[in-house]
Amino acid sequence: MSELAREELSALAAIYCEPGACEVLAASETHGISFRIQITVKEVLDTDVLLKLFFHLPVNYPSTVPDISVTSDQLTRAQCVDVREKLLEEAKQHLSEPMVHDLILWVQQHLKDVIKQSATVCNEKTTLSKGTEDGIWMLLLHFDHMRAKAKYVKTVEKWASDLRLTGRLMFMGKIILILLQGDRNSIKEYLILQKTSKVDVDSSGKKCKEKMMRVLCETELQSQHKRFQMFEVKEYSSLEELQKEFETAGLTTLFSEFVPPLLK
Image (cartoon, one colour):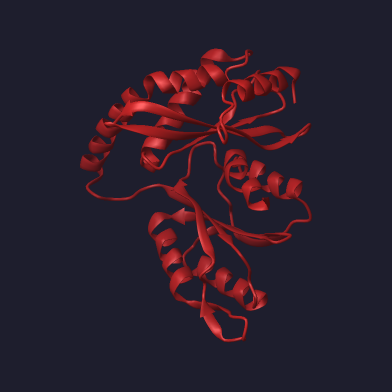
């Protein structure tokens, strides 16, 4: 990563020095650096909004804009996506210079306006779509374990095939992830199957439902994301190998936001 990126991260850590306000998630010379900044924006929607901003600075940053992801318990997923898109637009105005602090200041100043605009656009889309749900969606799931692994894998493969979902069932050490892409209704149906079917066995060998699954992310596929052409089961020997899988699919930010914390 560039010396500018190192210096900028050091400055950010000094500015956002409260516990949990600035956290490095991953760093390497070949993949760049990923970190999270947590801020509170005052008086938005009659309440304070806690924003978690995830940044991935690629090795050629700041010659290219960072990957950005936005999450907040006070905002809808659509609002978070709109905030992210506005931040990426703003980032293009700061190419070739360190920009993360400027982007954070920008979102603090403009969050209220972005949310208002997002609500207007959302209402217009609802009117035009008449309740339809278009587009391709993506789902990332985390599993604690699979005792009856061979049977479990075959079941997941069948569900993905029946619902015409593509993606990956990924094993890396103790980490087990399922990444799915497809029609939103099919994604929802998969979740129902996953939660209600006796897909594994308990410690005594009896069939049981999956109780240790977590939905890490469910969102609409964005233009920078690549579609998987099929569903595959893959084993990875290292975190770097798993990270490369996400990067190839244009999902660097998704990886940085959700995978490294699973190792803690």
